[in-house]
Length: 148
Length: 66
Image (cartoon, rainbow over the protein chains, first blue to last red):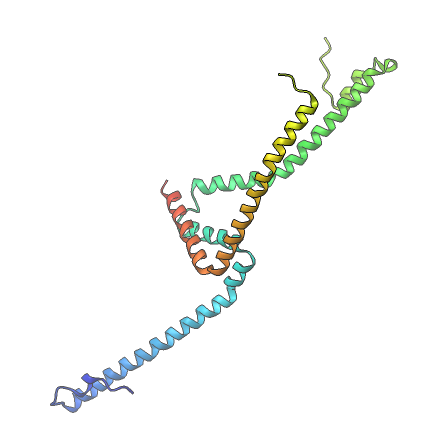
């Protein structure tokens, strides 16, 4: 146990004062050792957390992704989660995610329309089937002028 | 202004000769910059992550004030 300078009294110590001072010193000592223990536990916990998360390895493997994740964490911590900006970003993300699907759909429609147009033209060009050309064209997807 | 096909082809080739090296140089510059940024992030992960969190925090703060 550590001896503290104040523990010996002021030169004329009674036995009771000596006992209370010794108790105080013991308590301070105990608090100090507990604080040291807490500090070492905290350091160990931080080390374990670091090993579990493996931040260094993740940054090594995917630097831009980790930076984006850190920006997202900061954004949430800054209170930007339930804001119009988040709604805008989400909308933009949904649109970007849906873009390939819409593009494929539009390309398919355009291809079908073009094929129908080609078929209609070829049928219109042949004199034998002049009468049924408009019917074929409408079946192939080409719009037909209204008949009055 | 009349241009025959040969002249058009020549002009297109000149334009290509002028533009393609610039595009290649710009692409090379971008690749170099990307490599530098990635190596900086790998060398200082803690700083970069803390900076990114701070930037995100500021953006979130500004967005929440509006």
